[in-house]
Image 1 (cartoon, rainbow, N blue to C red):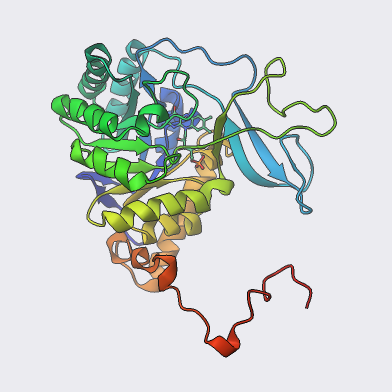
Image 2: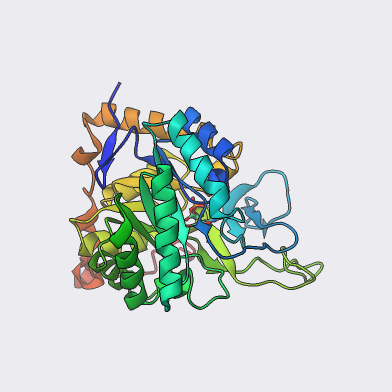
Amino acid sequence: MKDISVTFTGLKFTNPFLLSSAPPTESDSNIMRAFDAGWGGVVTKTIGLHPVTNVAGPKTKFLRSTLDGQLSMQKRADTALHSSWNWELISDKPLDWWIPKIEGIKKAHPDRILVASIMAGSGSDKELAHWQDLAKGCQDAGADAFELNLSCPHMDRKDMGSNIGKDQEQVSIVTEVVKEVAKVPVWAKLTPSTTEIVEEARAAFAGGADAIVSSNTFPSLPLIDPETLDFEMNVDGLVSSGGLGGPAILPQSLAKMSQMTSALPDKAFSGIGGISTFPHALNYFLLGCGTVQVCTAAMLDRAIGPTVIKNLIDGMQQFMEKRGYNSLEDFRGLRRGNVVVHSKIRRPEGKDYRGGFEAEGYAS
Ligand SMILES: Cc1cc2nc3c(=O)[nH]c(=O)nc-3n(C[C@H](O)[C@H](O)[C@H](O)COP(=O)(O)O)c2cc1C
């Protein structure tokens, strides 16, 4: 059996597969089940100090496609998953609730990695002190690392989530403030909804981040039902921008990741977005990621993904066996250099050029 353990930001993981910050990690019972199922690490649902009240009604739904491309959140036969859509806020449990839970989890699973996702505001000493209070509380309880949530896409507050993840100065400041008190590694989870994500990544590293995590969900709307003319998810007919996750975002998230791993090949990256099988995760590894994280696929597999993690582990072991690799380091980053500027892609010789009419969809 191949050893698939990895060391990432100085922490030893039994395997490079983590549950990301989301409903699968919203409670200690879920997290313990996740460790029992085999996940190498978990990132807790984001913990904050401000009061949180979620919208009335469902917070997450799943968009599915029929074979002929009909997309809907309604349950229908013979469909495949397209994406998850959510407008859930961070954990509605306070820090005081989380501290004993983190202690209990670490006591029961001292060798598994528990990353505390934290979030506060920015732009004032009071908010920056909140980041430090959260970090100290979770660290004293036994958290092995922090993930800074600079990426939640549905925040009304201008000083939080993806609103500060788009602001390079704030990204640096927040990272630096947490690093001042942190005795454990600090990861920064960035938003994909920026023009040049490499700039935010540089800003986080300038503030002392040990790794970048990407992607959070992509800003999006649910679809409108053609019968009722209502958004498929709404409260009193109203909707607000939420986050898209799952298979639909895998290629988009890879594009963001590739920009960062190419520009900063010596830094540590944890990839998220659309992973449910080892071939999906392999994309992130070949682009240079040292760990990957999963949300949507786990939510749909008994809440914490026991089958998903089994398939990821088996898939990685079989892949390494077949190729004769002995560790992730043998293949990490192998395709990082194959993503180049458009002008570097070979063009056909003049006489062979057919103007693109060989594309699928053109009549022969
Ligand atoms: C319902 C739901 C809640 C989420 N809550 C958080 C959160 O509290 N903090 C965070 O950093 N990311 C949160 N996320 C984002 C996920 O951690 C992950 O980045 C995203 O879903 C993409 O991964 P996926 O394609 O595997 O779902 C949430 C996602 C979903 C679907």
